[in-house]
Image 1: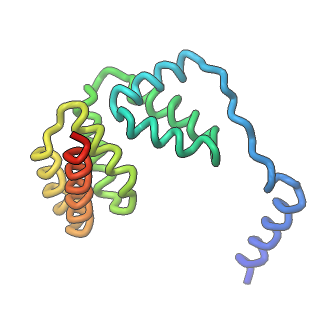
Image 2 (image 1 turned 180 degrees about the vertical axis):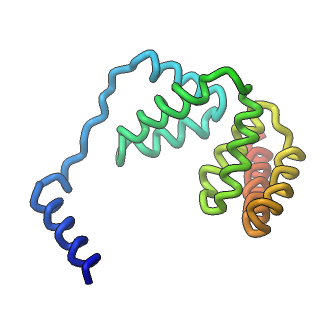
Image 3 (image 1 turned 90 degrees about the vertical axis):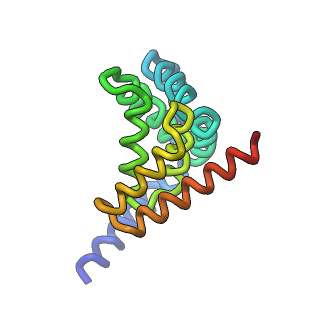
Length: 155
């Protein structure tokens, strides 16, 4: 009952503030951080990354900008690990999460773009069976299968 009361109060506060209908406009200033992130996103994810950003622009333009600036402008642009190693880590992490298939497919594509082979990705999924369980490994393998089928149809 206490949780329901809190939810009702929060709903009324948001509704009463008039903020529910407003969409904050994205700051379109292209900073060095943004430009570096945009270049890195296109380098690694290619068109799939651009599609993700485009899909966010009408509903949450700030999230699109943050996705360019932080993960790609700040983190992916670091040079301690190469892009191939980064994508192996990301594919393993997303596969282990088990509930992020769209993001996993984007990063399987990215991994293939930066030189990870389909055999290596398959091996990552087998490894995930140990640490994340068979359902995650199976789902990751099926995501790989879908990506490979999609890429083959584009050739």
